[in-house]
Length: 297
Image 1 (tube, one colour):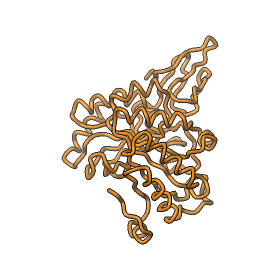
Image 2: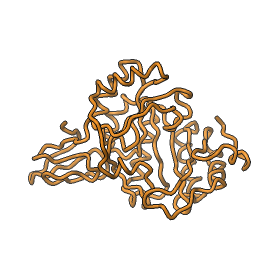
Image 3: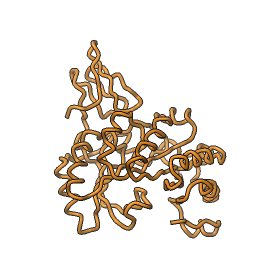
Image 4: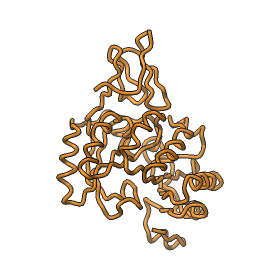
């Protein structure tokens, strides 16, 4: 499948305009994310239809707290990512070469319809970075909408404005991972904070949006920075749901402990000064209640 949003250089290289990396890809090489190949001057989306993971999940697992609560959604993932987070929990598909099966957009539609009787409301593009499956989502999402079902995106939000603008009408809900309020740290993980902020703003204008912040001890748990983050989110909308989730040791961050529950509660209380809907995830409710936290939802 030919990719979209690219241009050819006179030397045969290609510039990909899907995300802020703006990769300049030599002949017969792939871009930073490994999902786009310069095939003799044609940029190919090599993961088109490549499905590495599929499951019928509770909508709350994405997580969505205020979008069809109590329902289930067909979650599908491919491979590759345009970030390199050292704590990635899905690194086997985001940063490695996993086993997969090929699916067509019609296959996804048929699977989504067949699981309606089990409570399915649509399709969530998730697990790896779904925006790298741009062409496949472009072809699949209209079929899902025509069937009266919803499309949800669980993403890091690192996408250029033109691709985002073209995709927005197809997506009903977004969960966007806001990884840190530190631009330099974002860049060290392969992301771009201004781009993620723009994605949050643009998506919020036309779709349901929820935000996830994974809190890593000693990395992105500074209270003052988190207050700035929360105030900015409230400037977009004080009704933006925020999920504060607990870190567990993963990949290249095996030496760090899980996030203390008290840290999550402290940051949650900071966020609640600005935002109406704040949830804490990846921990036990009882522990939260003992520390004086009650989910507003």
